[in-house]
Length: 243
Image (cartoon, rainbow, N blue to C red; front, top):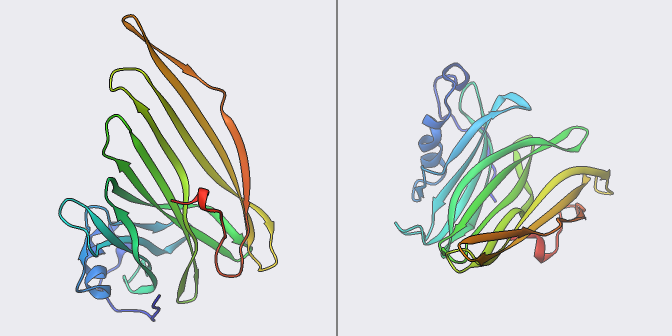
């Protein structure tokens, strides 16, 4: 991880023009001039918690080829909305692996992740999709970041918040399942960060051919929950919760 003070990158206000996407290449060249930005999947938006800031997530092809096979580094940054100057950034090499399960898109999550009275996190979601028709698969993971002065810190790494998959014959018969996880703030922990309550709902179904019809049966949803505690560095979690 590298941190540095403001970089003078722009000479006009982003808020006035309302479009930060025109600056993605500028930020990319300033931070990683030797890497190729996957501009199709780079995203940015005004921070709803602070209109003076722009949040951005930029994937860089480290070993990924034209068929999107390989690894991507993930750059997450906070910039000044009036000048475009980078306030802080965090780079995670090989953060995204794309193979049979293909990296599909990034999105910024600005839900109210109030980790402490004076500190609100924001998220980056990474979505993947499988390439098999008879074994469909999709997954979305969530990273959380906090800004403290000019230091951007990742506090949650690759929590799976959505997953769906199945196996079928390509016509009708098969089994499918979908898991969704949502986060809410829990009690304050000993390191000054609130715990994260994770609510998990899994739904599944079974389909079978009956003559010319395809009959699908839904099973009762399974609902469970977990608590993630901050260990002073990150929110720890067991392997089954992460991609």
